[in-house]
Length: 89
Ligand SMILES: [Zn+2]
Image (tube, rainbow, N blue to C red; front, top):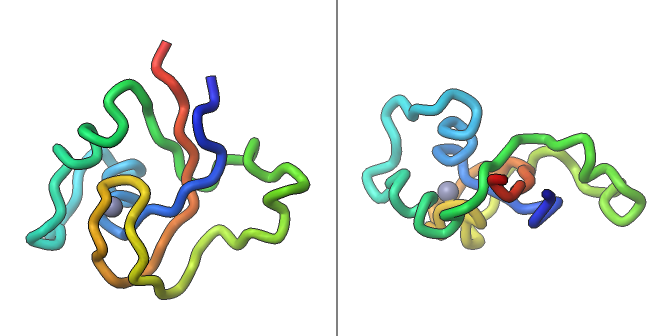
């Protein structure tokens, strides 16, 4: 079940979502923070089902942002990738 169709995650979260691991993550990044924020969810990148009308103007990537990562909650400045959160059944 879809929890959040459009959230923006930092580079390290995106790598973790895509690969299950992060090479050379930012010292402040921790997968624990991701699991803490999304304890009963799994995240996917560039979800097709978030392409509804209300999101069609959203890019898949924001080149630079220093707003809070919606995955891990860090303020790591850099690229933000679009993701969606689904509830684990
Ligand atoms: Zn993050």
